[in-house]
Image (cartoon, rainbow, N blue to C red; front, side):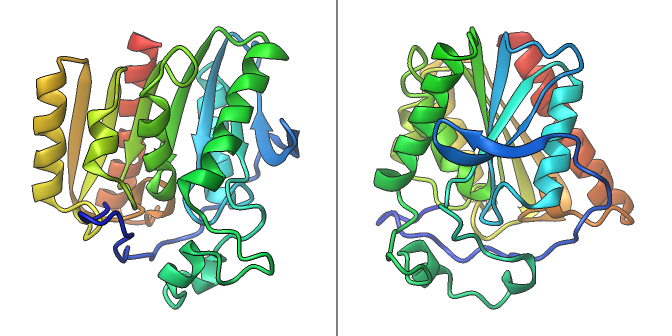
Length: 255
């Protein structure tokens, strides 16, 4: 969660790689590198734009989760939001996050901020509609991606009709206030980026808006539990699986 200046606070980037073989493909979508996975019937009527955490579209945990969405009947596109400048799994505890966020690790010094990321998401949505004939589009955001779920729920006609995010990283209250579509949220007990007082503030904002929304609070887990939780830990595994079911149920109802 962002502070009042909008600066990213330090996330507890820890976690586990998950086992499994991704079923989708790495390709180009709307001019960007992406991971794309189809439902069994290859339908593109309903789509999910999967906005990943800082490990990007090639991280197997995120790919496996995208595949689960496809198994539930959704066409899924997970674009590279970082132009290749992702944080590697082995570096998540040592990276200088503010330096990365400002583009300090890539040769072109391209920052990972809305003026750079918004056009990527916008182009993907346009491609879904114009080339694939998608009628309904939902956005899911994990950590970094959460911010952009809110930003593109501010204009459901041209953005997302329904959204879900979990353990957000950088997120301003103003972005939550701009939401104009149904939204589902997952939060963790041990998350300095989205502590309970900020969860309550987001709840207050959404209550005043009168839109369908859901906030689930998961005890015993921390930031990143939806994609990097320990599969051998009973509580972590349950939280990971449950927040996914939470999101699918919400999308099935409102998308």
